[in-house]
Image (cartoon, rainbow over all chains, first blue to last red; front, side):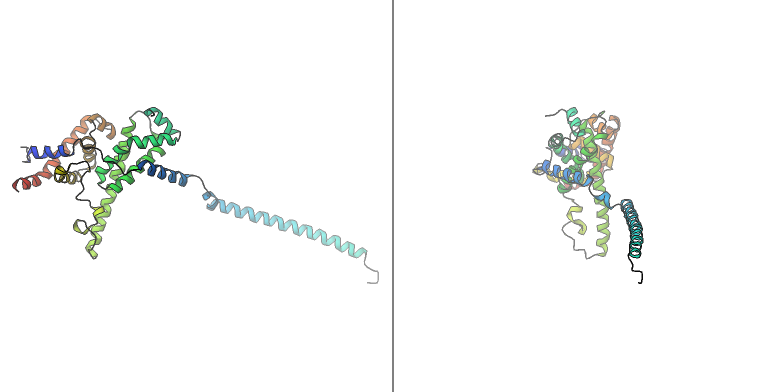
Length: 99
Length: 201
């Protein structure tokens, strides 16, 4: 008997009942399922198009867009002003005197 | 078959063949250890898979000064204990909710779902005539502090030598002996009533 009044043979028998047990086995195709999990984890970790939607990227893209638009408008305005001046000169040159 | 050194080198290079061999070779020891701690086959499989994925992902941190199996056991026991703690937190929450709910949860004790409270779990390797005795012992093991539970599971259920348990737990053999001694004392005390009642019956 032990100091706790538990019969030693009972406790030892309980210990023996779980000692040297054959290992529990997972369900069949455990390796395949684990590989599938690894694949999905690697796919999720792979760099995708997520970077394109980050606020910083979107901000830079918007700024670039505005800059290009501004440049295009300025260029158009400048060219239109030049064209108007030439047209006016041409029209003045060919204008009848009594007009 | 690759040696442990080649296996680790293969894993570090991201080799799928090495990963497959790792899982094939160690799945039973990882699953068995996790199952003994969490006591639920579905959850044990989920955690065991997670152990192998983590090994693949963090193999770069494996120094090589210890055995690969010891590292695997450590990841497995840590993940199993973490899952066990989460389940207990859910169990406490479910109990709290059941105090105010309809109380018609399914088949567990105290109106708790069986999955959250597997009171009658027994290791599948236990022979039929020993199941009642083993069931009581496993229920008592559940109440041990984490370090004692890990030491007891690795030594008693997995059958690891003390030196290997010490390597897994990153402690000395003397400390493991002390943990096992305290675990057995606690189990003996807990099972006292059961055995006395059993004898009287």
